[in-house]
Length: 166
Picture (cartoon, one colour):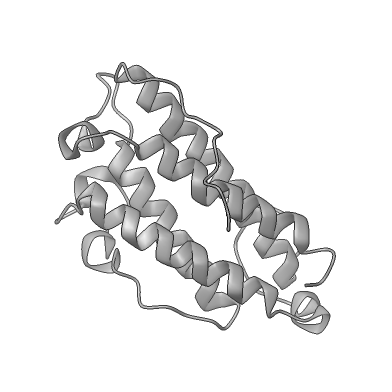
């Protein structure tokens, strides 16, 4: 793997586990609950993160069928979601795109990373590497929101525990 990409791939790998830790023990009803002040629900944020990772995979030339499309297609806001996925569906899709993304990132070359990319992310680096870096930050931002919402539901704080690897 290109050494510039290795830390970003590690963040994506960590974030895969952290979102799963945030979802641990939540019911579907808790996942769809919104705080009294409004905003997004945990399920919406988790589905959005899954969807954005599919966008990243497609933009680096390694698309994967996105099961969240049926839920989020055309929805820009919470109120526009027509069919809510279960948290089990989100977990499954998240694990799948997480593994796919690790393999896809490992296959990128230095030339791939330097390739210009026209995206609308609020950073000056318009290369593939810049897009990947922004979307790593995007993951972390929304996982922080999910962790906060979890605590507001009266659940224990998100754990940084990672599954043991063989």
